[in-house]
Image (cartoon, rainbow, N blue to C red):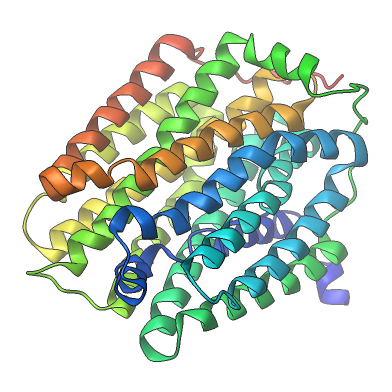
Length: 393
């Protein structure tokens, strides 16, 4: 107990980030296996990813409003616990339809961890350190995303894909108890006074810089889910023919993002959000092009650059919200998460038809177009440097 109470201030938000992603993409590396087990198409099994991201998108604004009323810490802790329970229930799925259902419920409870932790950071950290704190949080999401996919691939090959859900569910429950002990209570939180979502939500949607940030979030998750979902099918097919465990292992490239994202957070604080994302987009486009080289190692290098690009962009985007949203900040983050995960839902299932016609080169072309749209959004709509401490109201 003493060790938990003495944990560094950034550790709880890293754990929250880990928790929000360890379960979210569990089925991504085993999509080819699920297609084989259930005799389903690529578009159908990709719904096990889309259902989770769609659940996040639908629930995010409500999680933000609840947190604006009840406080950040209680919502984060309870949501982490519920995420563990729904993940455990996913292991009981008798067929693909039930698996999709439980995946949707996993998504519904995730924003209580994901969106509310971002709002907590923007509330509790000094403005000049928000970027670094957001970077630490995103590093937790990176490691969580990698761990969930690696667990899934290994469990599917050597035991059963259901074991991955059991392990991830128990991890989430353990993190919920840890957060209850280590996450400091809010010191600057002021309960929201809005009686409904409509008025503050409309105010956020009328804010041009917030709308630009929401659109950027759509592009960010679209990119990484299109990249990794269809890279899985690309590497599972001849001439590569990677196994589920090998497909899970490709997510080791996420660790590069975990290493660089805290540095990117500090760069954002120093050089500005817009410049950071523009550099990240250039790196991501280079990675997408490299992945076209017919070699496993080239694909892995491309995925490494692409994932790092996305994590840097995400860190800059979530910290930018806190600089331009002064009221109902958790709701502002919740709306961002909605756009973000709608982008992910489209990115995980939408390219299936492009895959059928043009395979991996077609998916890469789509990813490049999305990255160019992202760069255009931040170039024309974001302020070059915006680091002012916006007062809470």
